[in-house]
Image (cartoon, rainbow, N blue to C red; front, top):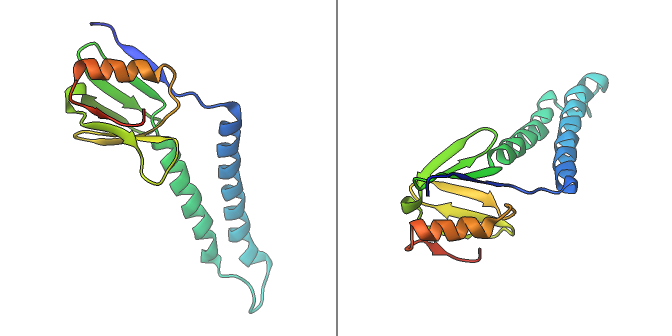
Length: 145
């Protein structure tokens, strides 16, 4: 096989709206908590650094969301590329040891090899990806996919 195949993440518009809404809520909380100490004065006023907490939570969630692959590219030579907005992980199909559901979460799959990648279990034609992976690496352990 010499052709590459791209598998794309499917997210319904409701999920996208929810993620964007939550990030906007944390941004609004950050703005309110940074401005609140300057508006209210007195001994009961919150300290200015209280605004760092929603900023850190929102920033961590944004970082976490942007690290999830939205494309899986299976190249003809057996190289698999997991593409996300802020990173790209490449590994050979023979390096992958297992694909299993993530612990304590629902809807996430952990791909373990020389590198570890967590993906959402909502890729179009994902069953074809699993079949193609098994053709290149028959020893891969696949559970719950």
